[in-house]
Image (cartoon, helix red, strand yellow):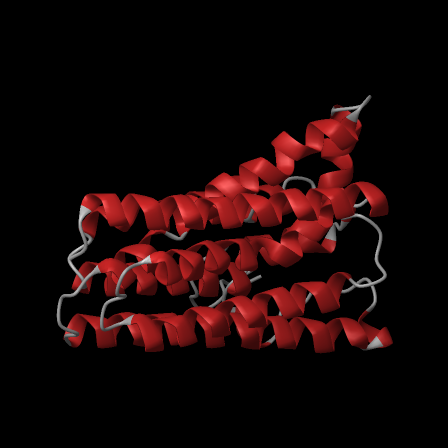
Length: 262
C-alpha cells in the first residue's frame, strides 16, 4: 500500500483533472446554451480522475491493467450512447427547468450549480477505482465477483439502451410507452445496470482492502433512485404521458421482477 503523502498527491492530481474537464465543458455549454452536454461527459469525469490518479502513483497495484479496461469500457459506452442520443436535440427538459429557476445570469451560475457539482460528485464516485489502483493486495476471488457484477451491469444497461433506441426509431411507436424486453421487468434498466456496475467496482475495492470506499456506490444509489435518476425523470411524466401511469402500476421502478397484472 502506498504511503499517505503519495496517495494525497495522486488524489489531488485526479481531482484537478476532473474539475478541469468540468470547467472546459462549462465553457462549451455557455457557447452552445445547452448544459445537458454535461451528461455526455459524466462518465469521462469519473474515469479521468481515476486514471490520472493511477498515473500519478509511484507504482499502481496489480489490478491496474484490467481495472482500467473495465472502467474504460463502461465510460466509453455510456458517453458514446448519451452523445449519440442527444445529438441535434434541444437542451434536456430537466435542465431547462433548472435554467428557468435560476435566471438571470444562469450561464455563470451553472458553473457551480451543474459543472463543479458534477465534478465533485464524480470525484467521490471514483473512490473505489482509486483505492483499487493504490492497493498492492493480491488479486482474489472477490475481484472476480466484482468484475462479474460490473460486466453484468454494463451489459444490462447497454441492452436496455439499445432496446429503447430501436423502439423510438420506429414511427409506429410514437406516443407509446416502451414496455418490452428488459423494460417489461423494470422501468429503468439503464439505471439498474449503472447501480450494478458501481457496486461491482466497490467489490473490487473491497477485495483490495478499501471497504471505506462504499461511500461511492451508496452515493450512486441515492443519485439514481432519489435525485437525478428515477425520481427526477418520473416527477411529472405521468402528467405529460398518461399511458405511463398504467406502466408504473404494473412495472417495478428499479429492481427487475415480473410485471403485475394491469
